[in-house]
Length: 118
Image 1 (cartoon, rainbow, N blue to C red):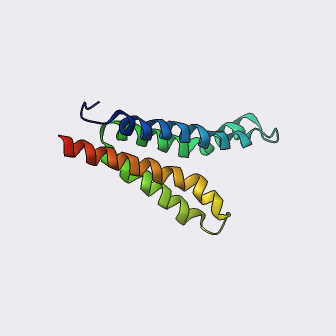
Image 2: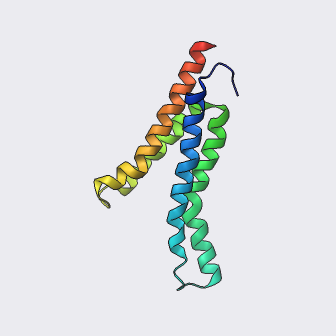
Image 3: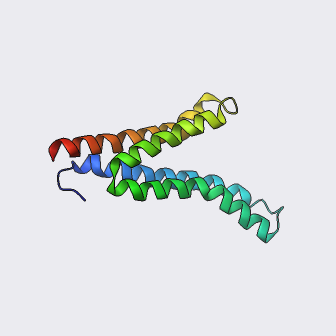
């Protein structure tokens, strides 16, 4: 952790990314409908949790290199919009891509301000 960062700007993208990973993980609970066997349910759960794994791996990288986190979180938001365009109401894009954009922007600001203070 660099001493030159503002604590709020340092912690807010990290905590928001963790909260978003938890929120995203809730969508994996729909695999427990009781209609699948054990192995099918386990595979479905693994597939549903892949986006959460990507978020957490990106957070690990971003913890040390904020510019990577800023870039990847914004890219994830754009990829989601491109992939899901036309499938859902507009509010869905705000709920999923919005936090990704916010976290990405906060990581970029943390990186830029940290570089300016160094």
